[in-house]
Image (cartoon, rainbow, N blue to C red; front, side, top):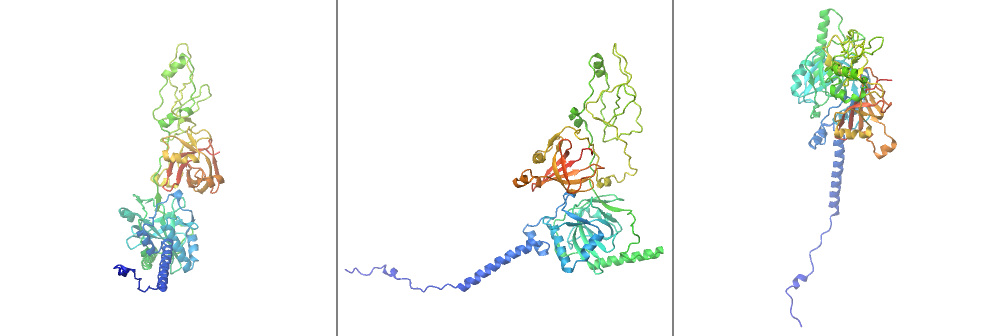
Amino acid sequence: MDYGASPYDRYDEPYARPRRRTNYFAWTIAILLLTGFALAAWLGSFYIFDQPERPDSYRILQRLHKIEVPKRFELTAAPPGEFLNPQQLYDRYVGMGAAELARANAELTRNYIRNYQQVRGLVPYVVGRYTIVATRQLGPGDVFTSGMLALTNAIDNGQLVMEHLYPAKPEALPLMKQTLTVGLEIKLERTHDISAVIHAERLADGRIMITAVPLLYGSYTVTRGLGTFRLEPPLSLNLAAGWPLFKAHERATIEQRLADNRQKAAVAQGGPVPIPGVASSATPPPAENELVRVEQAKPVQGFSPPMLAKNNKLTKPTPLPRGKKGRKQQLESPPPASTPAQPVIAQKPGGPGPTPFVVASARTPPRVSNIPAPTPAPVLKAPGAETAPVAQVPPVPTQTLVPVLPAQPVPADTSNVALASNAGGGSWKTFPPGKMPLGRLIGTGDLRDVADHGLAGERVYLKGQFVVNFSEANKAVLRPRTRLTDKMLHLGGGSSTRIIVEFPSGYTPPPQGATVSRDEMRPYEITEVRKEEDGQLNVFVREIMQPN
């Protein structure tokens, strides 16, 4: 029975539109383009991140916040480097070809931009004596946009020219212009200055001109002048300005003016005309005025009454005899001196003569030659007791008596006291082995706990075995010596701990590479423990033990 066609039968018809063919060629082209784009991005990232010294790379990294501003280094935490005098600097760069010199300059600038975090080899530092021949203010058209720039000639080698950078804030520019004058001598020393070479240029006449910047960014003054200016790391660099900062035409104008001035001066004096680059004498005369880096002078730490009262256990006073006489003398003895600057004279009873002892004072050094004879103090006679032939002063329980030290000569000229602190070597009390004041003795494994909680006003000593990484006139940088098992298990934190030891005047620090062992008889005294953001511990200690 045929019920007729269903109205829905039209939807049962097969799909009649023809199927499209896949365009494999277009897909191949698209995949190749995407692969090329990915490869270009990969290579571009290497180009940008591995070469930040290029102006376009530096600009992109700045916008991506992937570049750090130059940081200020400490003298004992500067990057490992080598100190080169003018002759050594000239010999290093004069033999390089154009391509080799370009690679060396790229690496020098790259290391400075990266704050010397990925340095291959040693950083070249500048030492020697240089004379300023021209100065100018830095501006937006320079690599360093704020501060002063000094063009100098090496005194020991006329073939080396140096432009020394002084980055600073605009507020310091007026004083810097008065301080950095033509003819001023700049003396760079290994123990005080860390000026790194960031560019080298070969001039048309065969000379070498280097660009140096002080990584310490310290404070500077002149030996015959008032005022001190402080340098600051630059916030950004304008690498598009190009190196060197003194361009060829500007330098040619300066040198022509200097040559004219020298010729006029020679004609006026009637002497021979000096030849540029040739010294008139083998030994240059001492500078009448020179630029030096200064540091804040640290006061000598003396013995204060609270500290001495805390160390009463170290003083062993002679007990007074029992009985009425001893009690009477104890009640009627003179009170101890309130100021440590006044010497306390003690005498041994029954001896052939008085043996002077004085209280060590950091404010007033004792004099030995003019010590007055001790005057016997009147002592009240108790009933039935004989008068003592020599007055005895009871020992002061809050002060430690030490033998008289020879008087130190006072310098005649004290105008450069602030500059003298830059020469290194402080003054503080030293002790024989095992005779130091009471304190807490810790090892290197307890330093992090001290960094978290502080010294809390107590005296803390450090013991352990250390390896000398760096040594100079009055300082040394040590690392804790760790065993192989500690290195593999990361115990003790020796690799992230730096011990900065300061030695008093007259001490010779251990040489680099030596091993130093300190125990409870000869420890170091901890003065400060700093914990950096990256987990690095900087432990500042000082030598308080007398040499053997």
